[in-house]
Image 1 (cartoon, rainbow, N blue to C red):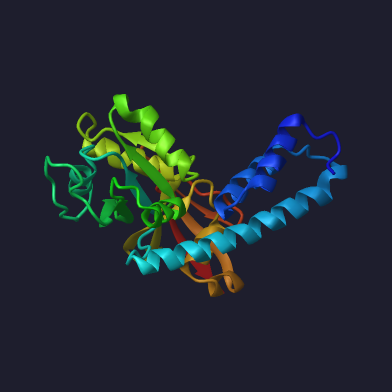
Image 2 (cartoon, rainbow, N blue to C red):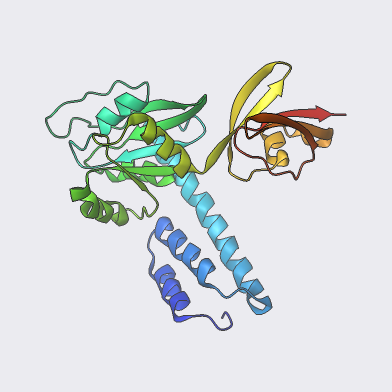
Length: 269
């Protein structure tokens, strides 16, 4: 039993013990870990909780991949974003505007009867966008739970009701989008920012190619994405960065933290 645990921690523990699905257990464990006092006496308890969480996440991901394969959705691109909303909320309209998809767009309800998929281009980075039918079929919603981001497509009048719907499927992290009021480029930028990614360019000769990485990634993370073998022979990285309109060049090591739009060239032995 953790030392000096708060009543909130024990409430989260009760949720975990009462949970019937992996998703419910994962949410409860994440809450327990955040609420557990962090000190020497709780280190063993914390390690056990993290071990349970890791195991449950692997099981949940395995199940979701199976479901995704079953209904024909293979994750592609740097991230997967699911559009969820009530019928006639503008999901198909939005998908047609920000991706290469050509879904049927009509005024009659429930036009979309199966997930529609398109690829969004954001400055050379491909993001998979999946429109989930408004029937909220549990199999389709399980795909949404495995996505990196959920975009709730709605106007202000439906926000509360839609939150209740996604909460029923243990979806807690999402953004709101109104495709009839927001500019499409602004929507693409909102999605990108919510994903917590940045663009770093690889450089070979005169050729630059964009790569998506989580914000605050290091040169080590960048190098591993290119090829793990590069780490063994790593000497240094040459980095180009824009400072107030002027480009600066520097030589950095594996632990150097990258910034958005850095250009990096790896040098090996």
